[in-house]
Length: 293
Image (cartoon, rainbow, N blue to C red; front, top):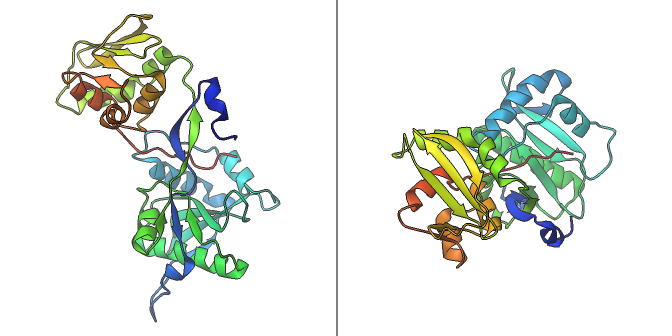
């Protein structure tokens, strides 16, 4: 997309996008003499069920994630594709079992130079090293000097290993998101809000929270820890919890914490008595959208 352009239509940057780590290939250690290496091979159609299970494991702990349909996976891995979004999925074998997978863009592009790992399941240290060594081999074969890029959550074991090996942390771009109906959105995430309350010292919360977005005020009413309803109160002023709409979206989606938003922007204010409730309902959490095209 065009940087900044879509913000004029009410979109806001909220979810990370793009590479998070750049690793020089020479930083990837070669295996020790006699060290047994996990097998790596291209994924086959019969691996698809196992891959979907591993993808679900990769999404664990993410606030916002993407579940891919088998047909979309087949389209992405189509060997006849020659566009910049064409992907190859590689499985890591431990014995005869598929222990994990990682995915590379088939071709280098101007937008994503170098060898790019665009997705990976959770991998053991041994398997993660094998994946990085494979990427190193691809980089050497292509004579690419742009390094190995990891477009993964910074919390991913593969990204963390790359940092320990001397990789450099990058500032990712972001997905632009718009929430056209905040009342409907907050109602849709009620199960998550209720679970967060239940697992906190605010279990059984029985009251309401009003969020003044300056353009409208929303009221979340809870009964015995359950979200009983969300109402738009119009332009009713409520000074206890005030956030510009775009800051509220970042809070709701876990992009930034309440403390970060209030420290960063003067018009974001949450009274001390409501801070524990807001922090419980809307904690900062990592999100990631795997390739979708």
